[in-house]
Length: 68
Image (cartoon, rainbow, N blue to C red; front, side, top):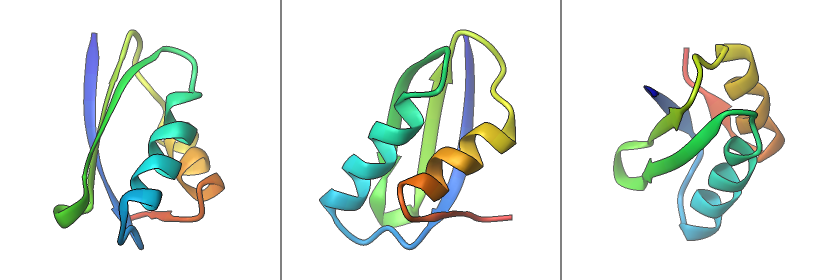
């Protein structure tokens, strides 16, 4: 099991949390997505190492940006 934490910009409400959780959760191997809204942190637990490009694409699909 692998766990990575990312910073996502632009999230302001529960709808944002749901959108990011849903999109990131669609990535193959993702088991759990935990969003810390006040800090803009998204922790992703997966069965395999995730590529940053896959996470970035999912976050952008949800309408937000992965911080550099």
